[in-house]
Image (tube, rainbow, N blue to C red; front, side):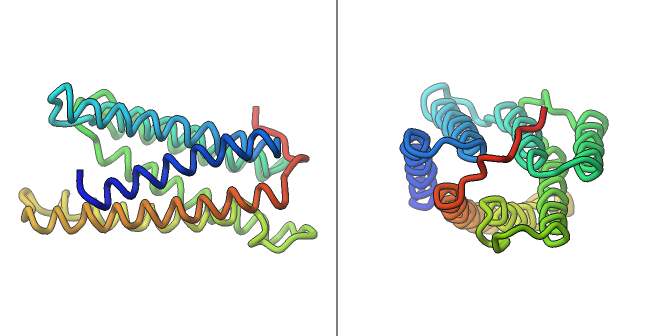
Length: 219
């Protein structure tokens, strides 16, 4: 495991522990979402590490295929709780479209990771983040948009998704990719992941300072 991979693992572990700490002090729906996401993410990374290190698995693709489906559902519920009426219905349509594309155009039961699932997820992330930002700009409340935890998550999702799509393009355009180029992409992606979770940490801080106690989960 490289240095960036170790740093990434430390960051998500510390975030998970911090979310547990916050959960004992401030209890609101947004922080519960954060706890669940970080719990599953840490569990997936642990399973992946065990698979590579002790079970001699060359790929953990099916684990990440399932994780991508979890993320798709998770961020639907995460954002949907902040919408009302027509906006929530439109967002539900976006979610159903993403599920349909996953079911029709991908093979999420493959042992190897299907990058088409990741592309669907990345596009859903970008659309969800932009939809939330547009909704918040139109429906102004008594807080700055940067005071909302979802703002920082949205920025992180757009950053992560944009790079993921750019990273995936060479894998479709070229049959074989230079090993050094692959290594560079992998390292840059670790950096992007670390930046994303730094933004996640800011969102955790915002959820502590301005708890969204009135928001309802999407059911």
